[in-house]
Image (cartoon, rainbow, N blue to C red):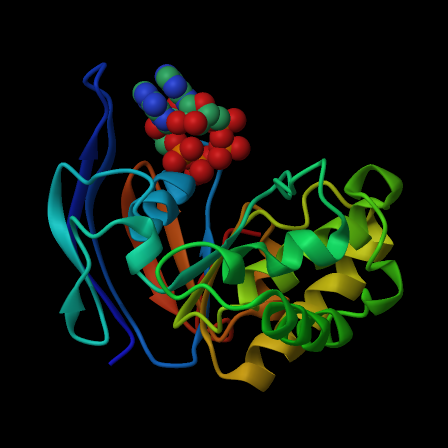
Length: 227
Ligand code: ADP
Ligand code: ADP
């Protein structure tokens, strides 16, 4: 169970080999960070898991089922981006409800709103329901993005540098919230960061990447990091 990544390789159209050979086993309910310098292949890895990008070769299985070739919508994955990617013309409530109102399992408006309110409550944005994203602070927008990613109770949550646009104090606060939230829901989570301290503070295990390979994969206490 969990996520199993085997011999993942990605060569972009221009011939650049962004991922050389990535293999990882992530356990059910684990919070794993992909850590490494800019350009080492973190986003590429995450986008392939999400199905936004095809691998050149290799396999990804979620709960023992290969997801390679599956449409992103059918992977049961929630994703949070660095720039939040909220729908600007929709209110907070409409943004959070959105995933429940599209696709083959679409819910009624009432049912979707009820579920959305539960997750808005969990992420402390209940009082912002009728606001547009442009009226919110960065931290509030990020909470909306997290609520929207969780509303379908996905098997896997992917977060791509979710804190990088927030100021230092808020970053500390929201990362603790994220840890509490994902541990509370038991959802398997992959968190991308280039910030060593952030990775150490939030993760069950850290994948240390460099130039398209995994250098170390271990819990924060056992990881060897350059001072
Ligand atoms: P990270 O998330 O660790 O910063 P990325 O996965 O975004 O790294 O990128 C890994 C490498 O692949 C970088 O050198 C980047 O420039 C390159 N890259 C990313 N996207 C493309 C693309 N569409 N075409 C060519 N090269 C790319
Ligand atoms: P990140 O913040 O995830 O590292 P970047 O800012 O490096 O992302 O890249 C933003 C977008 O540009 C991505 O869609 C990525 O695929 C694309 N990209 C990055 N590097 C290259 C490259 N060398 N050639 C073409 N596209 C690239």
